[in-house]
Length: 305
Ligand SMILES: [Zn+2]
Image (cartoon, rainbow, N blue to C red; front, side, top):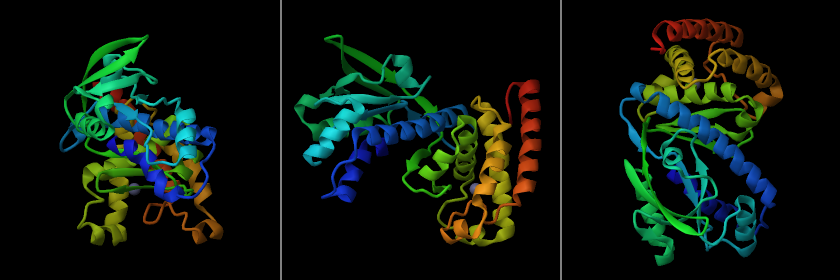
């Protein structure tokens, strides 16, 4: 989540000299980022017992306008997110720690763990970055003209990040514990349950350690890779069900994506989703069977192993 705070900064070098996008375009991009973040947060907290370790996650994003951005970029971001001069809550994960503490999108943040923005942006941002990794954080906000202090008790979550990446390919990838959902994939899957399967599959790779350094040889071996993909599918379907998503959406996502991956043009552009995956028809049938088994487990034991 700390990375999102840097997202506005990250836009600066790429856009140096370029005119700012419209506030509507920035708002739209931000909404898509938060959609991915919401689904990721649900999966990461609901499946914490499956992860090798756990980290505190307050389910919160706070933005400030970076003063080093050019004036038109600052104005565009301010209008896009309704940001004033101060810091503002721009995302609260439903059911997460910040949500339970009563924080709401649009709240003006005055101080985090006693460090006020008024005392300086650098110190404030450092306090915020640190607080987002702690089990508890104290947030002072301005609401209806009054200063209100709230204590956020973080939930435990799998130690992975889930982010939207600005790439038009219909793809997703995992680097160590960083799950990256390409914007082309997010746009292709307008149904949250279907997108949840893609994110859960990638989180399963992160849990299995498939994308760790040293795994390159295994990733290039079609037999081992095929097994990795099957294992990620199996765990992914269980994870999405545990987080309250419809496990049958896994096969639907596969059926929707498979036809989009075909053709020389998509191959030329490197739009490859399958690689060492099983054939689409086999994968789809397997996902359907797996979803039925998971639904059976959920009905019998109230959870999917
Ligand atoms: Zn995979």
